[in-house]
Length: 592
Ligand code: ASP
Image 1: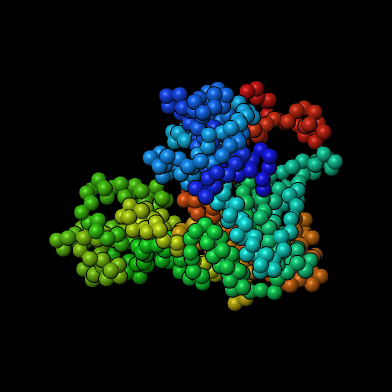
Image 2: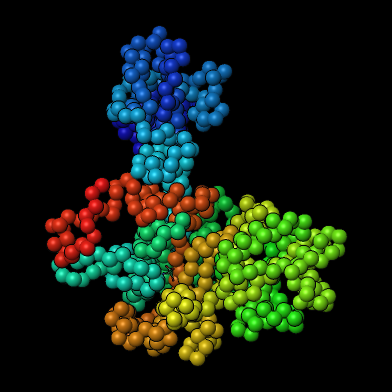
């Protein structure tokens, strides 16, 4: 759209525009005074364009230009001209053209910025404090453009598949995702609180009861968790739910959506993606979000160790533990110090210890375990590992969860260290057949692995009470290069099964009624079978932008202390506000 202040964008001007009269507006990116002739790089969202003021050509324009400083906002009018060929700037799309303005107006002056925009040494705190300036950086702007492209592609795809975007409320009561809620006190209902949604889970299921059939939403979610490096207290999901579908239908939809999204980001991917069960993912990769761009697969040696003389391992196995291994090729020459570092690494990952067998290049076998393992056992291990001379096989024995966690992280560590990961590959896969429950040592009870509305696998329904550890659900995750992009499940649509699940989770009837009673009630009025999934949008975009931090793809993120450094939120409430909300702070006001 042309406006009086701007007929064209800076970045779009080309040789084809020569002789056109245009009005451009933007920021002074830099000013160079070369012996009286002043060059200004004018910047707007679209790119850069060169302006020139020559006192011989137009004295008054030159006078204004001599006042310009970086980040002033100006508007200029004039004719697009061809640059002398020896001054072409190959690095700029607009490098063949320039303008000697005939009019110039300073719309706004700018103080010196608190940091130089493209200085890579500026601390993140400063950038977050002045985020509105940080957004002027090309990299940040490009990340936000990518975000826009991705969301647009997802919406277009889902719209074309007959989905409806429906907004769900933000002031609600507790949600079932298992994190801590953000609470909002109610003024008009003294002593009562809203919770902010951890996801639209309950509402999207109720939309299915309401007959919407295909729902999606680009939804804000809130979880009051201790922030790990890549978490944000508020984040965005592409959330969807469908009626009259099975797991494979959701998978097909999400594959179509991801194909469209990746394509918008310039990456061609080819569904259908591989599906592996949760069990297989753990056994082979030690992770429920395996990076399958490289091998280094784990293998089970529990049976071999049971046949050995190694009592410590046998005791662990007898107590329900497992012994798993990983073979790392070509590191038999590591020094003692390097092996000690590797042991410390494993301990840092949570192992109580680390054992290994080194198959040296000269055929020698070195291992703290040789006194417990006879030649046959060692041959069996070497064969199962597919090891050659020069390789090392590591062993971890513990509870399965610990073994998988340690070896899974070990695998990733060596994958990186030995440069086994092809960074240009896009490995997408589904992990299916997640367990229904997961035992929480902390809580001393079984918890939902996904959430309590996830359907048990019909083959395992009767194990829910008797053998919860081996009951599978119909839940699935989509994994991209070792990162979980999102997950979902087929939902329970029978009030009776829902009650049994609450019971298996140790949620009393009373509690279930109080927290989710309206949902259980709703299910009594005709509920379609339904299933859905949510994609973590911030993480997806960060991966597509090849940045490690989701803060880089959120316009106004919180820092790692869950604080907005720009607005200073959260801040103390005034006495008056607290009184109105019927609250009393036990924290002494802290004067900054
Ligand atoms: N609400 C779930 C989540 O946020 C996703 C789903 O089950 O659709 O992980």
